[in-house]
Length: 273
Image (cartoon, rainbow, N blue to C red):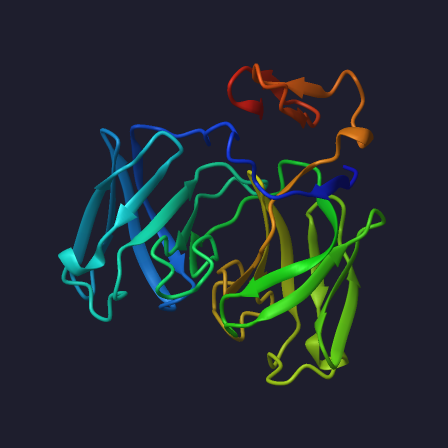
């Protein structure tokens, strides 16, 4: 498996809608903001979010691009956001997990209405099913620390991350898209007590780092997602690095995507397994 080169690009307003479904069996997702677990279900095009303890649920209709407006004030959820949030459901990622991204269209919580405020992700990631993404330095929102980090992955698989005053680099395994990050080798404040495993994940035009603890010290489940960093710019595969055979022109506007081995070009959707 080789690293796929990515070009930074803001998501175009004419982009094709994300694939969606009218039904999805209940899944348990880890909530990065609350630090607990939620239950997510899709039935007849309705998205239901729920929790057993404390007991609450809320339902909203998904639109064509698999997004919905969630008004948590209509549920019994404690500590709900002061405004309705937009949730985007990503059903496909490079580690075959469901990801929910929350933003605030009213710009009450952040002046940028597209800024990621929280992420929910599957508690059990799968092995990487697509080439590992590489990208030039861009800003990532750290869901745990609540700040912004600078992150890049070069074409040779070197992952570099940091902020003003500290930086650290490590090698990404090209098969698993994972890298061991030992923050104790940097001057980062408030370092984790153990090295973490960072998985580089791509979901549609989003790129993320999902952190887990292989030692089981921070969570007895070594695969459990402890934190996620999300890139604040959209990404897409660079056309210049894609062969003619792998190039997918998937709509009448001429939008393109580079298909990996085993993927097919589907009109109106893009590259899919």
